[in-house]
Length: 82
Image (cartoon, rainbow, N blue to C red; front, side):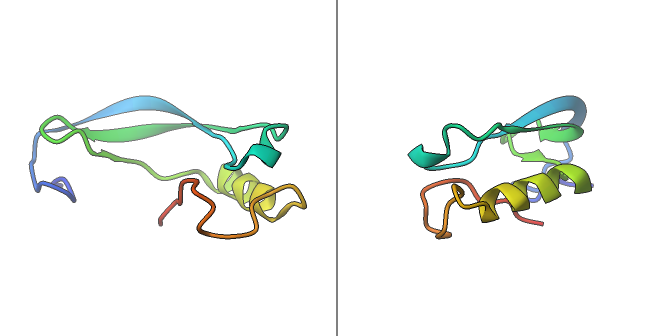
């Protein structure tokens, strides 16, 4: 498998922890979502590839749809892609 960004084959798998904090000031009281997963890191360009586990992805979706969650996709926060 080659890197999606630079097409290098110089990649290594690492155990990683992700802490997804909800964007916007009014969400400071929301607990971050923590996920442990294997991350594939390109040792040439630094790109990281991993998949958020289903349970944590559901918690992120629920946090974004909560009354204190961001209402707009242009909130200045991060976006997760599949």
